[in-house]
Image 1 (cartoon, rainbow, N blue to C red):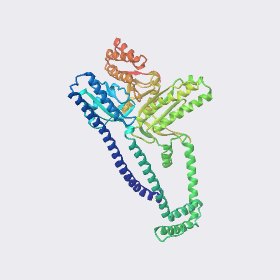
Image 2 (spheres, rainbow, N blue to C red):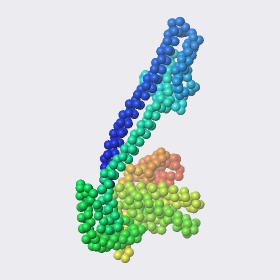
Image 3 (cartoon, rainbow, N blue to C red):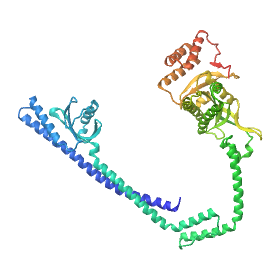
Image 4 (cartoon, rainbow, N blue to C red):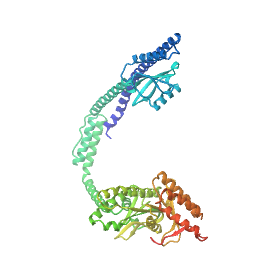
Amino acid sequence: MSIRIKVVLVIIPILVLSLLIAGLSSYFFATSGITRIAREFLGFKADELEKYMLTQWQVLVESGLSDRPEMRAATQEGMASFAATLIRSTTELILAVDGDGALAFSTSPVELTPEEWDTIREVFETGRAEGFFTLRLGDTERVGRGFFFEPFSWYVVLTEARTTFYQDVEKITTQTIYIVAGSILFASLLVFFFVGYLLRPLSRVVSTMQGIIASTDLSQRVPVEYHDEIGELSHTFNLMVEGLDRAYTSIKNYAMEAVVARRNEMKIRNIFQKYVPQDIIDQFFEHPESMLVGDNRVLAVLFSDIRSFTTISEGMPPDELVEALNRYFALMVDIITARNGIVDKYIGDAIMAFFGAPVKRPDDGYNAVLAAIEMTEKVKEFNQRQIEEGKPEFRIGVGINYGLVTVGNIGCEKKMDYTVIGDMVNLASRLEGLTKYYHQEIVISESLFRKVEGKLPVRLLDTVAVKGKHRGVRIYTVKRELSPRQEEIWKLHNEGMELYYARRFDEAAVLFQRILELDPQDYPAQMLSRRCRLYVVEPPPPDWDGVEKMLVK
């Protein structure tokens, strides 16, 4: 930031603050005065109307005619006529409403809605009618003053449209804004001019320095104009340039070597960052010796797959298939990287990614689940274009696991991949396959469930031993949010699963049947309902632990 800007940034706020204080003071004095006059005038009208109405009623009483309906009607008509003489603008409105909400008189045509009548009655019942109040009549917001006329049980309201009531205030506000803004602009221009004039010698130092940098001509010198701090700076700068001139040759050679080395590094980075995450490249440039060293780490592994991709590929020309697949991959990869994930590899139409390496974050598991949800959401947008172009839609399944893996560069010096391996990775792949079996878009493991519990809605699906394993794990599905019906379904399902594992199959079957009444197409409820009915007839053995063994991947 230049000195000129710094000086301006010091002076301008002082000027702006002073002008704002002066402008706001004038504004508040003017607006408060005008508002007071407007309110007093409206209050005066209310007082005059109330006095007139009391006088007319007194005349009626003293004449002994207060009980005659025709005389009361004539008096009321006279009061309405007097109220009309008080009107001074087309937007002003005076009306009276009886205790039943019926309009007694009005200086302009108006129809009160029940809500507007309730508002008027509330104003008088709470005592706000003695002061000023605001209310909406029809499509107009109004400022009002009123009184209760007891002889006729009338609520009398004198109102003026808010825009008319405050129009002078709004004019003053607009004028104040223009004046203050113009003053600030003019003062700022003066400050810029005088600061530039005072700092002109320093600008010459800067321009000479920039000329040397641009042309590498170290013969340029700064004229010493004044015998002050800026003149001393100019003299010191000239001495520095003379020293640089003597060392120019060695500096140029060193700079050339550094530029060449940097260009080579950038070329390597540009080539390999298409295949290896940027974090990995940075790590191995700093520590080349770690390239073939593995590391045991707890992280999340995600597998996603396009359902029935073989059928889709058979129905599309190769070039259109590649274009659609590349567009799909671009959307999915953007979501994964935005959630700090690493795309490990593409396996045909499948994607393998992990969260937590090389940089570990406390929310890697949660980010992995959010990425899966966003992937399923983004596929719906992707399919909109597919439908518009008359192409088949993509349906995906996502499986995620969280646990200990070995992560690092696997391979040799000629060919290696930065990847993760381990039994936990295999389970993540099996979970992706279970999305088809359980008809769910996302399936996560129990270890990942603990990372998102309380943050996202989660539904327990089953306890399974995937193919090749004997130990069962609980599996869940997850969504970003649920509709009221889904909330009830998931709550009933989770309660039913507790009864199911407690071997109370008849009670669990009742809950699953209630889910099917809400959604007959709910597959997990269909599946668990069938199991419960079967176990009621043929109970499982005493050592049954609720684990379903999967015979397919």
